[in-house]
Image (cartoon, rainbow, N blue to C red; front, top):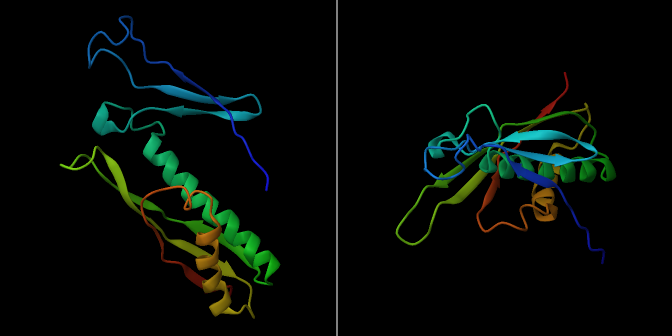
Amino acid sequence: MALHTYELDLQWCGNLGKGTSEYRGYARHFTVQHALKPTILGSADPAYLGDVKRWNPEDLILASASACHQLWYLHLCAVNGVVVLEYTDHATASMQDQDVARRGHITEMMLKPRVIVAQGTDIALAQQLHTQAHHECMIANSVNFPIYCQAEIVVKA
């Protein structure tokens, strides 16, 4: 069993001159950096005074879940003889802002991959591999909310 570690540098870049002396007196901007990767420009969700043009933590966890599922699915297809030609996902997440029992939290995610496969593909197997990809996905195995998948498999004409 291998232990994998990850690291990055996150820096708040929203001090408008007075730090956090006032709730509305600072920007929620941050950067995520790693020496070998492009910088991610982040902020809070616009509902929390963030910038709609920057990635927020909720966007990033949704992207992580979608990407992890996709990578596992492509791997499983490769080792099971399913030839994927294209893969896109329109993923969504729902977040409950606050309720009586808990602070804000994501309640569910929905992945909607559209997969184009080569002619002659076993469609039932291609569909079943989404279930296996979900069980293998490290992100899905790490969160405390359900991640659903409604995959569409299309045979290349």
